[in-house]
Picture 1 (cartoon, rainbow, N blue to C red):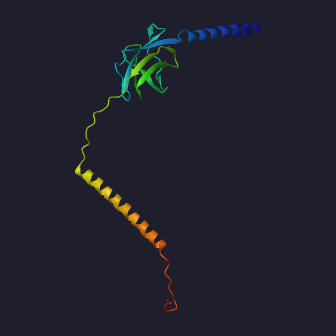
Picture 2 (picture 1 turned 30 degrees about the vertical axis):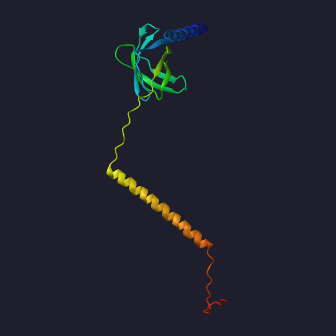
Picture 3 (picture 1 turned 120 degrees about the vertical axis):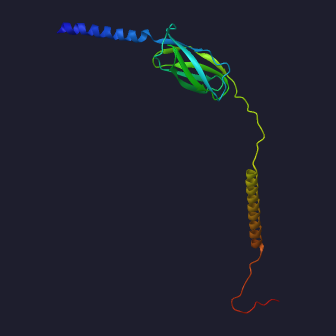
Length: 185
């Protein structure tokens, strides 16, 4: 009986070490952006193609990868879930950068430690050419009517204030209820 316990303890320790070694053996991967976009624009959706190599050598497509972009100046972050597409080791993610500037791209995964980061310069959105706004006669008429209602309302309120103030300044009229006119003299 003692002999079984004596053998079971070392076997349990060896099994634990073997499990830990297998977990730690494949613990990292490198990620790179393949064909970075020429001019990503703030406010627009930017697709990034990634290559993932376990130990920097073997392409893998079984990972869960989150791509995190951080604005170097403001510290703002944008994140997106990458999906495996095409050949083994190829992933794609779409990000929308809210502002222009230099963005640091990094990677996170619960499966392996991700190595690699890149900088991406995001341009300001293009300024749309403005054209004079064409208004319809109906819109112009509605605007004129609204303005007229506003002016009439303002003048009416002003008139009520003037009448109210004049009434406060007048002496109160006395009336006699006895039927005899007051003596003035």
